[in-house]
Image (tube, one colour):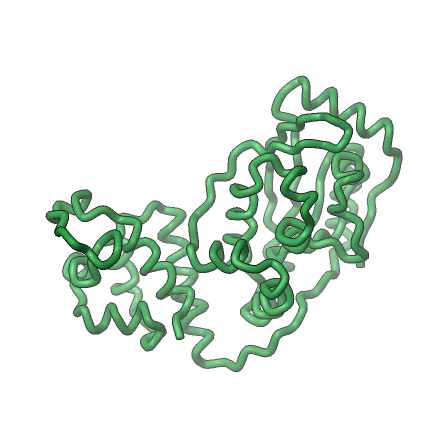
Length: 278
């Protein structure tokens, strides 16, 4: 059985062209990318040891080995951070029994007061599993009619991967799906991640599982939305981490004047107040 760490290393190895490492491109390769023996040589480890890591039979590589693999794979800073994080949770996972549990949905009163100060702007409080825990009336106005907030306990991942309306609402659905799947690896705990994936994977299917295994670090550009009323919204996102609760405050800002006018129009049509979802 593989591990997140092994999946990531294998995916990155498969994406590297041998020529970029100064290696000849051999004919009749069984798989794309860099051979296991080539990566092992570049990282200064044995092929047998690299095989054990990729296959999940060694879950505790040293920091020196992790750094050597990061160098050999030519990872970007964000990819290096992800590799170290996967090494950490993979090591923890071998010593504990995973008991799927949902994460806490409590939002601190001071966070709710902060959110209220952003009214009538567009903002939400969410966690790494995609639960929408609280939102402003402005957020409700730009999502009204899309189904995103229809559930008693709305979850961005559940909506994104299971509601057909999401593929129309999110113009760049594939990019957003990559972002959300990647963020699941930053779940508050292994138990929380196991809880969501056990519940969501059977209904989300390969669109989710393929992205979870690929570990592609997303490029978070402008968020483009097609509102049911015919407005094309282009939004910038500013994310503020709430590390004590493993939550985030996300503020959405119009990226252009046309979006600002559309958001203002939608707000006037949908009057409401800050909502916390318990």
